[in-house]
Length: 399
Image 1 (cartoon, rainbow, N blue to C red):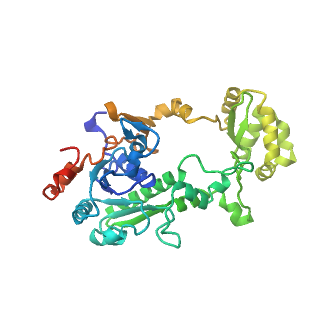
Image 2: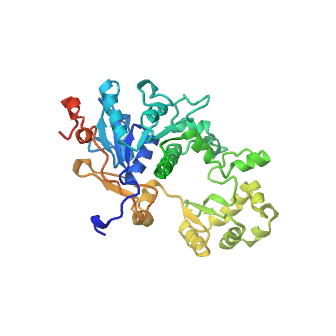
Image 3: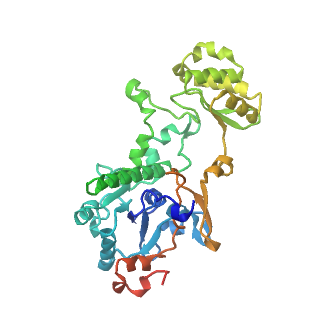
């Protein structure tokens, strides 16, 4: 397919003004860029987004962390402490469809860019907010990183084991989850506006996404007052559904989420006696006797290596896998086929990152690498006819 015949991306023609920092907001705005929106990242002098100088890996002298969260965007530098800078941001919003921020609720009120003020001046705008605790309520003014909300949102309480105690999930799952939720809300609000509506204030929070993660677990608490506990790599709802030791020292995960899968699981193990064991008669029984079940399963799995078991489970149609590290996951043929790892930039600015987790008639492509600080300041201001009001030193790297 040639470039001229390529289908238009879903958000082609949508302008997003991105005032976010850190993970959640930056990732949400980056997803919109992947969907085709022109995302203009607004950064402050002199250093821009704090993640430009943070992280442990640097590619071409630039933070790989920043690059991973800002691919596809353009960057403009504005001094929002000045009246001129605020006027320039307002001019951007007049020509935009979406404004995004992830500060504490009303933290922008002092400079007139809170949701109420912006929507009063620009009623067409979809205003997107991501926060730690939500836009209203007794905790709304608190800041909250992923770790903090994993603790207060009960994620840590069910992660780990009895011996380890509560532990955090190894990736910022609440940042990414709230980002995807906010992006979904923004796209929905744009759709409603296109049918004759006006703008809207879309919000998500790490706390709200943390509780959403318990959708399939909370019913046991609501109905039977059963408080979910940390169960290591096993499920509080289904059994067998977790990680088991196999013969070569590797871990194999297998899930039997139905009675038919449980029967096939036992057939693969060569253990028909487990099917008539009263301890394992129903899924609820297996969850109650999980320690006994794990012991019985591992007694069989330890007799063969993991590759042998995976082949047997695959033949029987029982979902199973070996526990991989990140290097192994990225190297898998399926990940390669889907093109989930992308190379961006050229020369000293070349870097590798993870692509968007969705497709629309095929994979989404970011239009450009992550920007250098203020890289597009001049071209963006020129488009707004603001160059005469901008000191030359602020015009960015394209001059």
